[in-house]
Amino acid sequence: MLTVIAYGLAIVLNLLCLLIGARFLFQPVAAATGYGVPATTDRAYLTIKGLRDGTYGLVGLALLFFAGAQAEAWFMLVVALLPLGDTLIVLRNGGTKAVAFGVHFATAVLVLIDAVLLFLL
Image: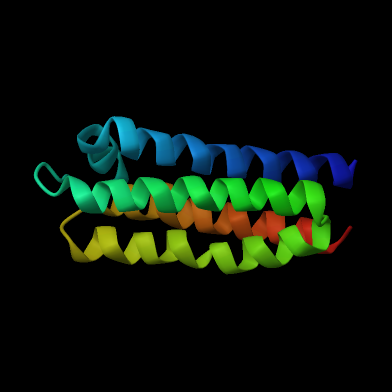
């Protein structure tokens, strides 16, 4: 059962990265608003974020399927730094605490939980 939960959560988190990346590529202004720091003019940075998130999703899926749970666990452990950084970015740039902690910090915690679950396999 632990294997199903750990792998299932990893797959969902990686797919969410792909979806977030696609949203930043195809709906950058709406995605930035959802991120917590609205941006209307600098689409280059929004595109960078979209490519970053999408790439992390693809790398995570590749590690999970081709290298296994331990590699994915280390990847998740490192990747948890991104939503922690996003939390600080939102707080430092006028975003709400609700988005900073309810979205980004909560995501970091979920990624860390999945890393622990994967390490246990």
